[in-house]
Image 1 (cartoon, rainbow, N blue to C red):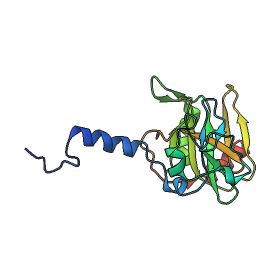
Image 2: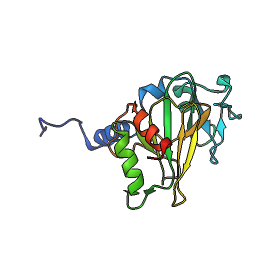
Image 3: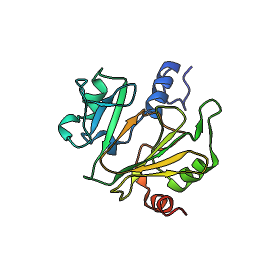
Image 4: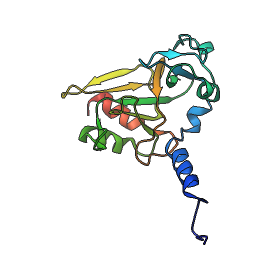
Length: 185
């Protein structure tokens, strides 16, 4: 008997839909030709398996080509001065077993607002993606030994595409949170 409120036709379709929603990357990233593959040690690779360069766009490719390549173990994305796409890299802030977020990271995530957030390849960090004017990367050491890295250009980020929580597949404005982090407030 069919359910009038059902969105999918079967448990298999429901699982596929859930996976697609959970792993959906923002179009603001997938439509840019700055994708590469990455090695197990996070070295950026071309789709042919050669070394890729943060300063040579000829070594980058489309998301479609990078996703189809079997070189390396995963995907990576290069940040460029062509736009204002930035990534905040929060190290060692997530307990993967309990799914709990460190209070300092929860505060940054709250301040970031509605934007795409993914779990980093290590499984215990987060990448907060958004928009801001960041021309020089910064690594901000925290007293507990963890760090927040802020990058906007000339940098490569190893991607998982594994969405954290219910973050949307869009890039929000991170200007205020970047300013706060850089000023130490």
